[in-house]
Length: 324
Length: 127
Image (cartoon, rainbow over all chains, first blue to last red; front, side):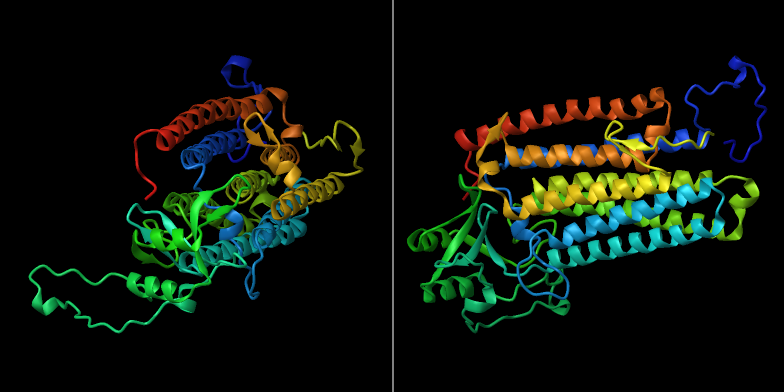
């Protein structure tokens, strides 16, 4: 109810003694923040939709990008992100149970449930970090054309992706490293890929069983695989090797996909992280008995609202990034 | 603040004895919906991906509707909107819905236009 300031309830209606929404100041302000934050996330997701509609026929297919599960080898689309979703929903449940225990003034139950919530949040953030690391390091490698499009390599028979390391030829060449001592204007050397474009092209020519998978999506919703002749012709456009993803290059396809992935899941992950921190603060307050002395656990309810909101946003991110 | 909770979901079809039970019931429902989404996302039934409704695959409509269903139960039962006054509930819900629908409409129509230009116009970008 009245959180920290004891106000006179008997004030006149126009003197502030009226509560049309039946909610305390703090709770209303939390809702104000959540509505504006919801609009921020909607803006991001709408921008993602914009870019996706703009490149409707060449957008990466999420099922082909996020296929990894920690400690398991193989192709498991969706499984890990479904696990993350479940963890987050579960931590939302323990949070709402903490709020419920707070209403009943059960301090120890609040402590237990809040602790479980914090653990759930930490697992989620950790999973997201792992997902990022996997996405950044990439798995098969690809080449980028002059126009910035991505060409991936597949087995012409099965259609399975083939890693660059499995076919690229090793062509020994002389390399002179530019060092700071002999340059007036010195730039450090950037990241080097494991293979040069020539090594990949020669390796491709030497393996007749390989074909190129383009970014284009056909009517069945699958990426177009070129014939051997088309592949060889297309490979002439290759300008550089791409391994993994960052904000400029992305071996999975459109670079905008990587940009939005980092931006939206990053912003959401930051929310989860700050939610865990805020939960921790409230958790210690509960242990110290702050709300027991205050006479109510509304702070737990307010931080709970924020936590559920994080879950709510994830439900949308999950749909628009991984499902649709 | 009143701590009464409305203990029924699905318009009274499913009633709970206590708030705690309702929370577990909602969790079961949300998990069920997520499981449906994941299974559909992995198998992508051809019947759903080949049917188009209003220019979008039926499967994607199902995903979006199920998402909104989940959002409803998260905000109504976990965030206690069900127990708030209806004026507050409407202020919170309709403001974003109106603004987001407007923004999404504008951006997607514009993006579709740019897509057509890239496809049929004299712009070479896929090389």
